Amino acid sequence: MVAARITVNGKETPIAPAAAHTTVLDFLRDRGLTGTKEGCAEGECGACSVLVARPGVHKPTDWVAVNACLVPALALDGQEVITSEGLATVDEAGAATALHPVQEEMAVRGGSQCGYCTPGFICSMASEYYRPDRCAHEDPAAGQAAEPAADSAEGTDSEHGPNGFDLHALSGNLCRCTGYRPIRDAAFAVGSPTEDDVLAQRREQSPPEAAATEYTRDDSAFIRPGTLAETLRLLSERPEAVVVAGSTDWGVEVNIRSRRASCVVAVDRLPELRELRVESDHIEIGAAQTLTEIERRLDGSVPLLAELFPQFASRLIRNSATLGGNLGTGSPIGDSPPVLLALEASLLLAGADGEREVPLADYFTGYRQSVRRPGELIRAVRVPLPLSPVTAFHKIAKRRFDDISSVAVAFALDIQDGTVRKARIGLGGVAATPIRALSTEAALEGRSWTAETVEAAARVLRAEGTPMDDHRASALYRSAMLGQSLNKLYAQTTEAVSS
Image (cartoon, rainbow, N blue to C red; front, side, top):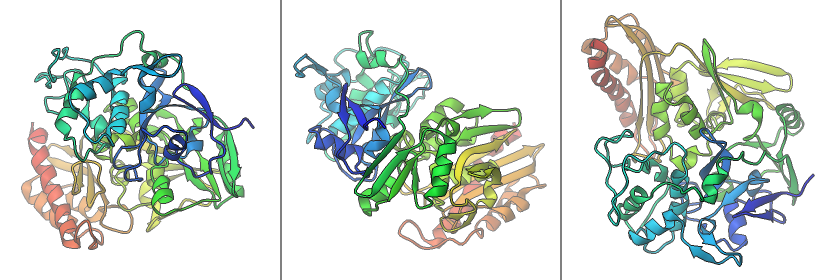
């Protein structure tokens, strides 16, 4: 087995003697790369953001920003990482000779005060800077902060720049003292990579293949098997193993609760879990694809998922998080289960004895419990076709972005000639598991899509589930929001349906 190592800013660096649970953040800081900071240690502030070379959607390689505080260093064995220090141009002696364009704009437009959060912002901005399909709509005026173009193809709001920069790329980065206006100015002022930009050129080559890894220290092991069959065999032998993909959930357990595992098995780069196939009667989404990859590959072809993605945590989290992980935790407040329930999705569970398909509506059995057997993996999510034409995802939370849902409601309705032919409603945050609103579905199907029908069904919806009081919301508030969400859907869709 080749010794585990990461290429950091162009130089191969051995991971040993790090512990199996050591994060990329601690790994980098231990080697003097202190631009990478620890803020929250749970993926909410972005101070730890770094760039990783990942398989691309529009080019062979994408430079993807991730939370270094959550990812185990061993998960990047054989991979390439760029930190904020590695973005600047350096001479043969390693001294910086020129700032990166993103760094330059942040400096001249006053985008940094105390500077603590700045390196993380820089890396997230650089990821968007190198996004292959980012297209400028007009050149920013020299010496002036760019303003969003009113006729921008990417939107007419203040969150999209004339240079094609999507401010949602920074949704996972927090600044406590500078203020976001100069940071926004810097983001909207950056141009496009030049032909001699080394990192831009790197996108034309494939990223490193995932390294088969087996690393043990202090009775803790980190293993990345090479195939699904090998993974399933390992899980049958070691049922206590913790399975990770993006590590956005397990990383929090390691940092905040000091959890340690005797064996961690990484499945994020297994080819069998990274396919996306569109068939005549279904779409099959590999469980280890990141949410960003799914979003860009589907490109809006599943409108309900397209509505979910911008509301799911932050771009930094979506760059690592997977559907398999979100479903595998069994959390009643995960954002993807209500959407997938409304889409009537099923899960393909792979085990040493073979594969079986389970409807998601039958998957959850209790709080963080499911029908998944020891040693089984979620290989893929299957969404049947055709899709219902009327869909919506309503997330009720205290923050607009990057927050946990108090209530999540997903709708998928087929309304023909003013009558509800089919209704599927997925709920999160109102029971011990994500659930289908079966009584409400029955109250809608076969009835006219009218204010009277909706109001009667809203009363039924308010009684679905067993909501509880906690620090996010009261049970009464959750129930009220259920009914209000259906009224909101009616208000949003009446004109479209009638036309």
